[in-house]
Length: 599
Image (tube, rainbow, N blue to C red):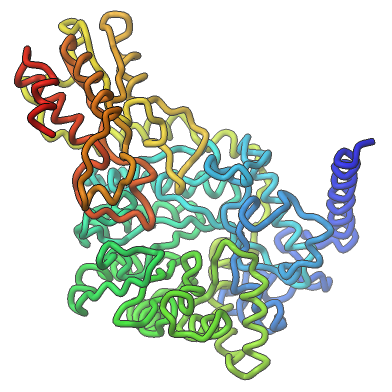
């Protein structure tokens, strides 16, 4: 028998023994009773296990039973399979990991992401298989930890739920373009419903950053530039998500969308926003939604303001968020925000000191794409050294536990009908809602001579050109569903006209050119190959009745840490467009005349 085959068999046997052991112990201790669960396995109904007791009373009872080890574990995120977790299902080795004492949340568990092959999971689809898998993970924490504190399963949701084949939504900037509060409320309800059915209990949505500078790389993830508009739509999204019994986590708090000098997450970014501007523009949506929709989560950003990192700012995380706005949920850091306190902002000596500053400021849960042991051990050492009070730790853990009680994790942590997920996730009605949102998000700037919609009966030849004409990634986001079928613009037009119109395709140019983005600042002449590529498109345009040029940006030019220096089309797309336009205006003179005068 080959070694790898033997290892595979042994792993399967070990997993089977582990799951059998979990089931056997659960049956022996009989912790699952009608109307309550004996989370701490002591044979009696403690206050925190009593569903008839007030939430605050249950929280205090549980907190009083927790050790420092258990409390510190409720202050960290464990990233799911393919990020930090190496196992899809619990193994015997988990009893040696730091999460043997519990964990605050597990993010993006078994959801499968197309851009991360390591995260592809057999448990992401069918939907019922994922719901069953989350049950197995949840049971491990309930049955194998001393107090049985359930996990808050978190996930992204700004483009629709970030899960294999969930219902897709357009980018938030497009959702904002609908100006339709009712539709946004329905979208929130759909995201919450799908999340709940799949086992997620906390959805990271909406993004409330006002996009005031269109050069910022994350404009696509925002509802727009107006704080009132953002607050109105963000409120509906929050209410919709939380109406389904899951938490909504707002992001990114705060003053995050102001990358001074084009700098973003990879550099220190003090936005230098005046106090009045900060409160009236950048904090207004958060204040409105916290006070009117009562979200259970907020994500702290990794920028600073007035020289103080937000994730280490008592003013932001306690003074404003809790004392002034009345926030009652828990604050989770954006990934690496705590490390940035010393790595980027240099106001802490090391990671341990950054941990102290963040917790004292009001941060509840640390998040990063690293194993949580270092952060958790930092907390334990700080308390033992007298640098962090146990009272402060209790305050932070109390918020996390309260959210877990409010979303029902201590009442019904296990999905008793996982097969229902196959019936209520990505339904025909969901598709119709998604289509309606996409249609209402469209902005038609000009329709000269009523060219649109294209009249198939009057056209013989159509040229489809541009670097995005045959691209599928325009419909896929790192923060949204994956593995859904995508229709490119080229295929869509071909399907629309059928055999009645001849459709030709020529790419024309790439999204960006060699040397980009430096060439936005210091122009470079088109290469011979680039000129020939544009010439091919123009040649085909000469025999076309209509030219459909599909231009814009892709995931390499838009996103986090991808702020632009210009609002022009990237690469050689402007030259392609001008060449096509020149052909239409000077029919008969051709591309050669244009190219000679342009260079």
